[in-house]
Image 1: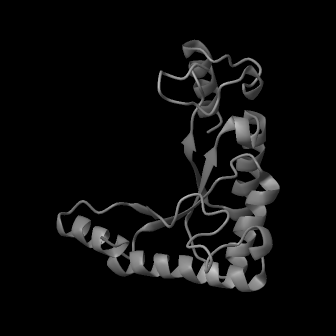
Image 2: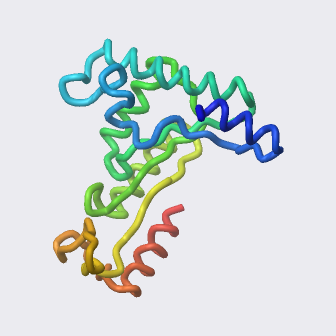
Length: 179
């Protein structure tokens, strides 16, 4: 089922969403090779193709419901230079969106202070709503039998936030207080 079909089905049962996210963590692009924009593909031509794909997604969503808010979601929660570069490129290519979406995983992206700095700078620069769409913090470093975990070493944790239920709760409380 295509995105337009899903939106049409939701509309027909009066359960229309308020917002649609075009892609998920699309910092490196989407629909590789046509829409890849990282590494050797970080070229003006690739950005043109990528943003055309995103604009087509936005157009499709808006054709079903012109009142939908459009979110553009990247995976650089605490990386201000990369976030700014990405959204600046979208604006340069005429991509119209309403909401900035960010993923924030502290072991990859930085500290809560880094996230706060990025949120503040993005809010000032773009004057758009910002949502941290994805985040998590571990309550244990031990994987359940038969499974693996991404965070499994003390060095991946942030000072003051142990991998315990209490550490996770403190981290999430501090995370929420950033808003």
